[in-house]
Image 1 (cartoon, one colour):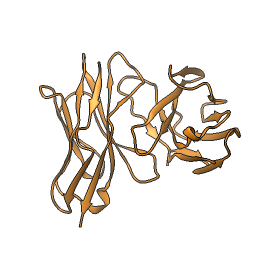
Image 2: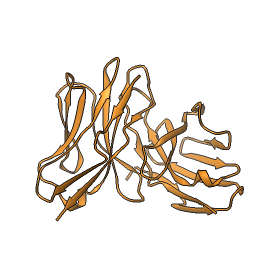
Image 3: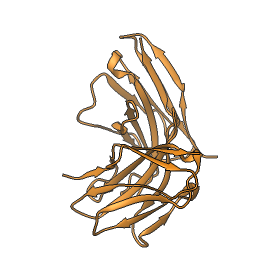
Image 4: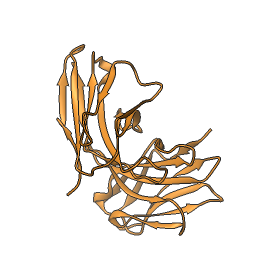
Length: 114
Length: 114
C-alpha cells in the first residue's frame, strides 16, 4: 500500500545535541510537509516543499531546518534541540498542493529532549 | 480573520448512540473543509472532505459530515458510535487564496463509553 513512513517512531536526544528525523513516501506526491504537534494540540506547520522549492513558515525557528534530496525523502534537522522542542513531529504529503488537495500523514516521530 | 472553531473540547457518547462533533468556520470566500482523526501516539488519518456539490459527505469508518453554508458549519456525524471511535478529531479548512496551508481547529476529544 502507498504510504508515508516516518523513522524513528520515538527519538530521545539530549539538550543541544543535533537530531534528524526522517520521512519517506511511496505516494509519489509533489508536496511534503513537516508539522510540530504538542500535547494533543492542533498541528503547527513548520515548512513544506513543493518539489524542490522550500517554503518556510514565518514563525518557524531557525533551529529547524529541512532537506529533500529526492521526491521520496524529506528530513527534519533540529540543530540544537531545547526542552521546548519536545513534541510529536508529523510528516505529510499531498499530490500537488492545490486548493482541494488532501494531506496524508505519517505515524509521527515523538521527540523527547533530556 | 479566517478561522476554524471546534467549540467542544470533549464529547462523551454512549456506545450505539449517534455522535456529533462540531466545527464552524469563518471565511471570506469558499471553504474547503476536512476532518481528520488521531489515535493516541499516531499520525492524523484523513476521514473526509467537502469541496463542492452535495452538502452531505460520506467518509471512512461510517463517518459523514454535513456542510451548512448559512451556518458556516461542517459537523462530523456517525449514526451509531463504537468504542473504537474514541480518539481526537480535528477539523481543518483551506481557503481559495491559500493553496497549501490548512487552518486547524483545536481538536475535540471523543470518548465513547461501553
